[in-house]
Image (cartoon, rainbow, N blue to C red; front, side):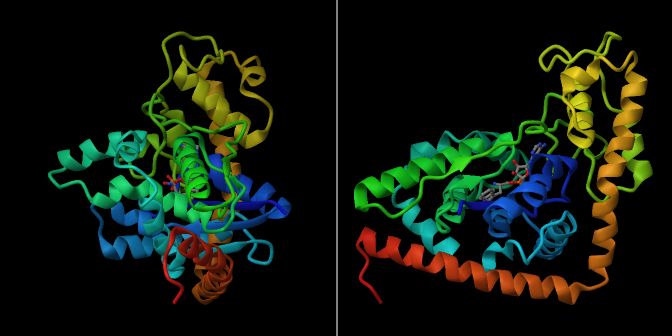
Length: 331
Ligand code: TYM
């Protein structure tokens, strides 16, 4: 059976981008068709300046939202990265296979490192090695497919390269994974700046729809989305990024394709109104289930504990095999 692995990083409140680009598909498709693991990657949240209490809170919230989005612990494994030591163990081995230059070429490092510096802090070494830990997350489970949004495909490429290199040098150990981005909503853009990704760690609140935003807040954000000069509703990602983003969100929420949908609108206002309502409807069941789960935190904890046990059992043989292959003396 196909092994699927994916994760979310608790560095901010989860967004509509996380949901449409990744989580919804995990719940609707992946967990039914594959042997799937979904992880709150809390170690990754330590790669930039962080507040310990906030990371803890966001990790719990992210796990709750994964379940609220429809992940069923009877069908898949939901867990927290730091509960399974194998990720960090394997990450070190992969650091011995990856090169410094390769890390410095990663787009997200090039974007984030100057931001960290501008905030007056130093750049954590873990920000540079982030993609290696991500490769370890994926390779530890013999993963075939990694369902992620567009922004993560370069990282998955690196995981592929490291798997191939390790296998070539030390003998066949890892499955070579591939990224599986969604057909629509692979990159939901910021409503206030449709040339930038809607990212949870960004500061521009009004451009980001959070999964837990109240319906009226969602409506306000969508109605105030920056659109483009011109009046016609046409789907043109380059020339009309604002309108294209709304059409993509609408298509992702209610079905259909953005180009065909554009023909149904003769004003930006009408498009925004329908998009806002479609987003509200998509978020409604997730928010309801989230409320129920918040009333039963012991259940979420049980799911995570059991998930970590299952994940550990799956990862340990693979990571032990990698230790032996690379030349470490068995304990
Ligand atoms: P993260 O937490 O930034 O995002 C989680 C998932 O949501 C997708 N996503 C989006 N998709 C479409 N439009 C957007 N605006 C948008 N924003 C986020 C991401 O592509 C991702 O699929 N490095 C990863 C976490 C990670 C991981 C892994 C993923 C760590 N280890 C192993 C897969 C496998 C990250 O920061 O995702």
